[in-house]
Length: 272
Image: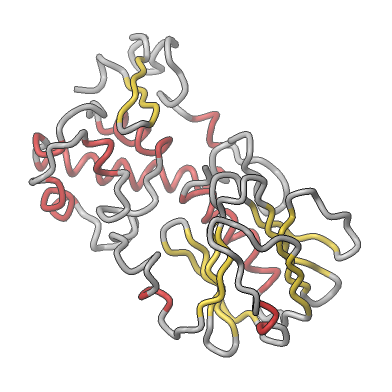
C-alpha cells in the first residue's frame, strides 16, 4: 500500500505540472471505486487548480471555487501525468485533461482508492479526515504527546503508532523501521515505554519518513512515482521483509511475526 512517503512523493511530482492549470475535461471510465466517484464530477470542468496538499495519505486538490478533490491511492493506486494521446492503461479510471495537451490520470488496479469532490470549504472536517491525529512532522507530534497517547494503551507499540488517530502516515514498513532505529521491540506494550523511549521513537519516526521521502518512497510491486519510476527506499531497509537474514547492525537473525494482522520484523538483540 502506498504510505505517507509515496503520497508525498506523488504530491511533489505532480504539483509543478498541475498548479494554475484549468481542468478542460473530466473523463471517468469507471465509477465503482471503494467509494463511488461522484456522478456529477464533470462540474469541476472549467475550474483552475489552485493548490495541492496532503493530509495523512490523502491528497487534497483545491479548486478555484473553493471546493476540493480528495484522492486516496488505496492499495495499489497511482497518479501520473500523460499526454492526452497516450494509450489508456487497463486500470486508468479517471483523467483530468489540463492545458498543453496533458492529462492527470488516476490508475487503480484494485479499486480501493478514493476520488471525491468535496464541496464544503473546509475539507479537514470531512469524516475521512476529521478524526486524524497529528502529522509526524508537526510540532504537535512530540515525545510528550506520544507518552500521553500511549499511557492507557496496553496494545503492542507497533499497533499504536500505526493508529491514524495517534499519528498519521506510519504504515507497516515505516513502523518496523522506526522501531528498529529506536531500539524498541514491536511487541512491547505501549504503556511500558518510558519518556526516553518515546523521545527515541518520535525522532525515529520522523527520520525514517524524511529519508523515505528524500529517496522517493519504498519500492513496492504496485507503486510508481508520478513519472512512472519506482521509489528507492527499499535499498535502505534494515528489518522489513528481511526474515531470516542477518541484522545489518549486529548480525543477529531478523525475526518475523504477525502483529495486528500485519507482518512485523525485528532484531531480538537490537530491540527490547
